[in-house]
Image 1 (cartoon, rainbow, N blue to C red):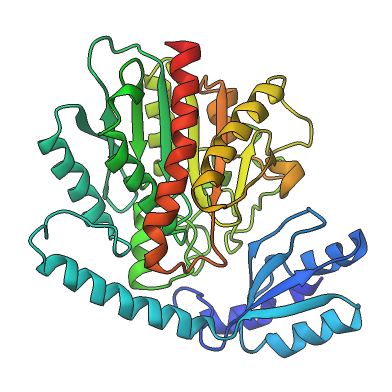
Image 2: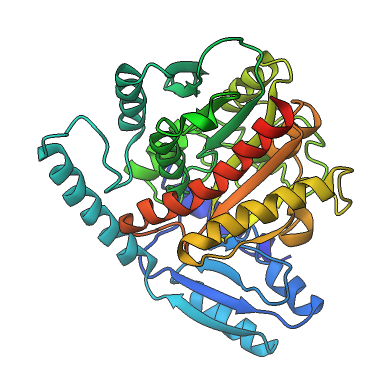
Length: 416
């Protein structure tokens, strides 16, 4: 009901502009603590409403919901929360200023890096553009015989979707670990964490002596570029929809396992729009075709997202647990312990539905149910919003790599 109240405002806005992107100026980040299901239901009424962007939704009693609210909606929303006795606090005063500061620091770091002696090598001091990501992969393959660059295809706008294979050679049917990142465009820390893993993995030969690694650092390049050049909060792909002012699809609702059954939308303007059909997005098709081409050799799958410090396994479409849940949890516990030993960062472990919310059509469910992987995880990296200081790139990469090593060791010990 709340959603339809603002429909007229959206229509009026798009008459003057091709694409609706809410203003970031004065947008506030609000952290909400709910005490019962009634309060949770009231807050979740605002999902999909004009001017509200839910960054983190959790069903854990000791966790908070994070939502970005446009300047116009802030006083109205705060008053509504107060009227319902719902506790909240503002943790981002002005998201627009945060983005401006990020943009400036990005440019300074990029210029400094390009002036250094190693200017052709990305140095993890800023968040790279898509072309820089691809260049890094190509450069690394030229200096390391165990690294091979491959393409899984092109995005809707024609960008090459590159990945690397890290292998000691030999048979092509060795068991493998697949890592991807960036399916949600605005989650910049995810691709850099995948790149950091690549940079470390090439020097850990014991990890790829018996198994192969496939790493795809950016599987939504069009959306990622748009989040750099046009709108920092862009999440979806960039394909056109039936509503010209609301392009793009949430590619992590677009995979063809239990597609559109729950936690997805058929309305193109929603952030969780699942597309006109399963695998409508060429980016999701490319990932699908790559996984299937490996004929079941991919045994472990990790997909990097942000944020929240969650280590999630299937299922995302139901609260029921998969038959191999004890193994999924056991390996995750070991990985989380290794990660926590670096800086004390702690992750919550569990199924996607039971920890966060139900969401069908995710890549993690599809890769395990259809793609043949025995272990599948969504790794929600640390942060307090999608804007994470560049100085956190290496620390997040370092601790995450310790968890990655555990998954690799398990794959090698149990499948090689």
